[in-house]
Image (cartoon, rainbow, N blue to C red; front, side):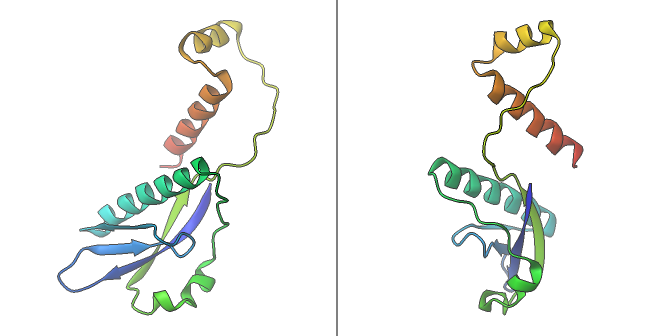
Amino acid sequence: MATYVGIVHKDKGSDYGVSFPDFPGCVSAGSTPDELQDMAQEALGLHIEGMVEDGEAVSKPMGLAQVKKLASTKDAVAFIFVRAAVPGKPQRVNVVLDSNLIADIDRVASNRSAFLAEAARHELQRRSV
């Protein structure tokens, strides 16, 4: 997981908007700060997912101090921090699992490694809430 800085903008009579300087073109909006946080999380995740599918490199996050120096922060009303899964290089590991659990996984999954990785991501996300 990596944490990216979102720049929050708000004009009078408009929703809150957010942009990510690490990902030009990745923007979202929400009518409340809570909704903005949720929408920012979704937008950033989808943006990174698309980059990975297209074979593009995902940049390491800029720090808040670096983001604050950008011209695009001039009218910022706040900054938010959004965590996103950034895939790394595949790495082979050895694990020991119960043979019946392996059989159950193989019955429902066409790719055991992908299934276990998805289950681990799901559990890590659940625990970080």
